[in-house]
Image (cartoon, rainbow, N blue to C red; front, side, top):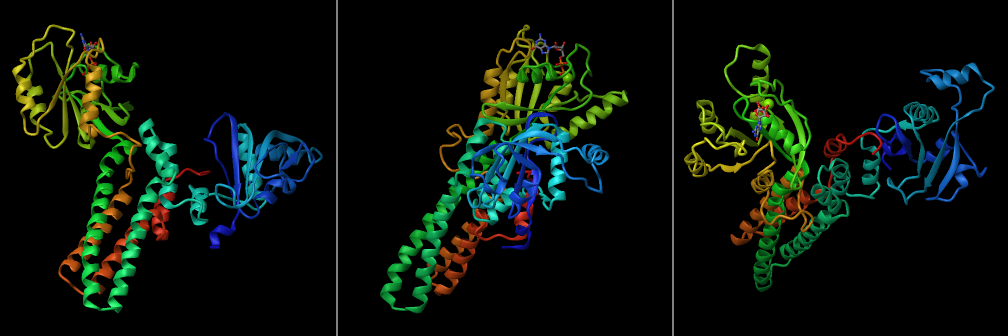
Length: 484
Ligand SMILES: Nc1nc2c(ncn2[C@@H]2O[C@H](COP(=O)(O)OP(=O)(O)O)[C@@H](O)[C@H]2O)c(=O)[nH]1
Ligand SMILES: [Mg+2]
């Protein structure tokens, strides 16, 4: 057991703030012993004798006096040493190793979700010998103790952070081990190939080597294709997991803020007939046909002397730079202005969706412009909407999805890679195999093939954590919250 696994860790697992229920989690060799000091079971039994995985009703005792950093409750207790109050009642679950999240002894205390109660208990647990867990440390222990592999650990965080049902489905598939099964299958196939190649290095009978060469080339090719397919799925996977950043841009008063509001179905942004109403960049996360979209409403870009508006415009330009996709809004009830033409001529490096707004009013926009836009290089998608009536918004959502995801893509149907870390490892594994295939084709010595096969096997092992370094682990678990 590595050094860090010997500590008993504790944390408040529920979010900061008031809530109906708050949960404290304790994991490690001394979890039961540490918790026992704070708990008096209603059954009268000692905590270390209770059945595992069953809830027990208990009172939580006021912690014993401590010298440093006393909380208010402890201060009160110090003033009244004779009192032995219960500070709350709770449900307690003991989950004995190895049948727990971390595969260690775990105690979970469910009490009322008051910050003072939780903080006091957490301090008392620390006072009794537990250490405050680092972010993600419970999950890291689950990994180090072999309960989860790395892709599953990552999927825990993806599940917590999922913004749409689609991203949740992919995270759950990964948590159940869907990706690991694929990776392990390919990795085991390569290990078998490596064994053959290494055996062939020892036996140099010509006939045998010839048959194996053909088989080997075919096997390598097949795995290269599988690796390619998985690595390519990362485009869709990341869009679903991380979402897409989009900015609504356009001249003042064309209806950008109105569009944001009607897509959100709330009055998020202030809308007035006065140009220059939006002075700051607003950001909202929308679910567009299953894709999380971070949408920025920007101030209309135009020449102005107003310093506040100038700052808003500067921020708008930054948001435009960051966005992968632009919704360029035009006012369909007016002829195009010079500013519109300039906006349309710029930003060709991004995906552009031209939104003709105010279609509830008589059209005064020259429709030949759109034929030009649709044949622009690269072409723009054009939609007509009315932010006021909501007309055309469904079409806008469909077009947005089509700009982001393949038409036939359905989350949860096949294994998808969602992390750049996985994709880079897959591409490294693929490159090593291509190099192995090159050596086979050139009839080079089996040793060359073996070196590349090993590199490929290692790259795949990094994905599941069969091979891991402290550096990789730190990077992954640092993202987690404390208590998970
Ligand atoms: N008739 C009509 N008016 C709209 C529509 N969208 C926005 N407006 C009006 O246009 C004005 C400017 O809207 P706003 O959303 O603040 O524009 P922004 O400056 O581009 O953010 C307001 O008076 C809105 O009520 C629409 O679809 N139809
Ligand atoms: Mg606005």
